[in-house]
Length: 109
Image (tube, rainbow, N blue to C red; front, side, top):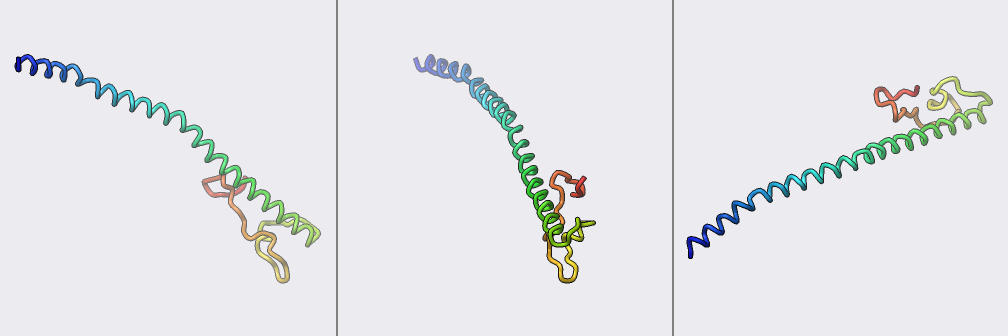
């Protein structure tokens, strides 16, 4: 009787050994599929943040040029006219902002 119980328990363990591995493979595959679906959203979010920053910087340039035109009666000839005040002038912009979309050198195209 004891021998038959042992053989039954041993047979049950041998039959169930592959289920844990199958479950791990299934869970790993499911997680990989979900990560693949989420990846484009993460990339798009980064692009949108760069675009928002570029719009804000463009508005700062527009504001600086408008202020310069009102004060001087002409358009600036360079960014130095906006960022580096001459004697008795104002700062029209605090700094020359870099292009957030151009990651190589930050210059505007």
